[in-house]
Length: 239
Image (cartoon, rainbow, N blue to C red; front, side, top):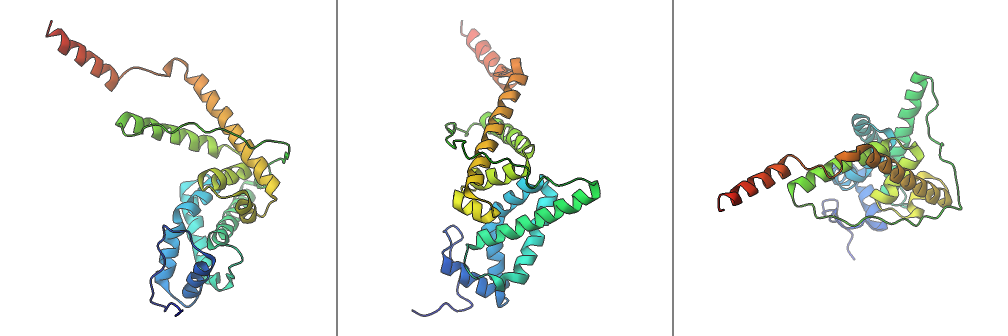
């Protein structure tokens, strides 16, 4: 089979990269193919940003960390051997950059960053049930989903760093236990434990928010109220 030339197109970013695909892309970047590097970033931007954002809890810091990690990746891409996927390799660079920033901030604040604050509990079960998806076509439902997403992000930010990172990799990026353990360089049992604890803490935090809302739950006002009033008045005209 004829080998791809330097100008051959990269595989579609929507497909899962194979090991040989990763090595080919890395080789092309190492030889100075900027277009290949741009497509690499576009392929992984969303997932890597989520990882940085979950670790640093700050949008701007996450963007800066991701940019610095990409620059490090470009300079060291020749070291990629394909033992892990490119995403895993890039994830490690992103986490290293995030942790370095946290350590620098810790020195400035004279505190210790919370990098290893997650207790292990291998007896915990990881069986949890997720809620059913709701129809989100209506504007009010879209607004409700946006509010819920903002609430979840705030509660996720409040989790210890180790819990946040594992939760994002497992529940958001849907990485396997094995991939997450390899990415974070921690035992698989620790991944399971932290993932379970993160979901448990998030569930409890959301339950507390529901209790605080009290009478505001199922509030009937605004557009809903206007619609009922207008409909009734319109029907009264026919009586």
